[in-house]
Image (cartoon, rainbow, N blue to C red):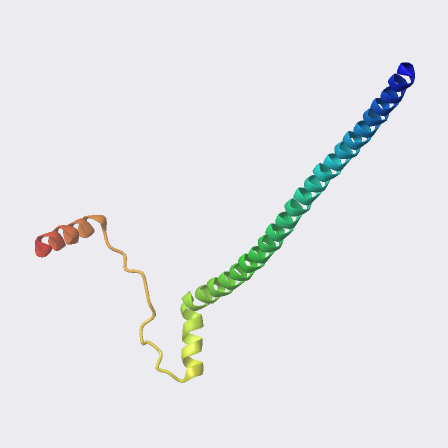
Length: 125
């Protein structure tokens, strides 16, 4: 009988070990799935942030493009208005009085210019 008890206890211990191994294996599998799920969620979060950043970047590029376009438009308008002939044509179209004298360049000798500069310094003191 003693031998029968030992074999029964041995069988119970063996079954308990198998059950413990099964539980630990399922726990390990659960932890692995949990870790893989967390990694997948982090990957999705990263992709979401990248997509949002790219969308914001594209919007800013479009704004830059629009500002560049308007800047070129205004620069061309400024260059157009700088030309005296263009201004004169626009004045005639509007029916305004045109200036009597065209703008010109005044040429001054270097010595005379130095004398004018000295005179201006004396006056400004």
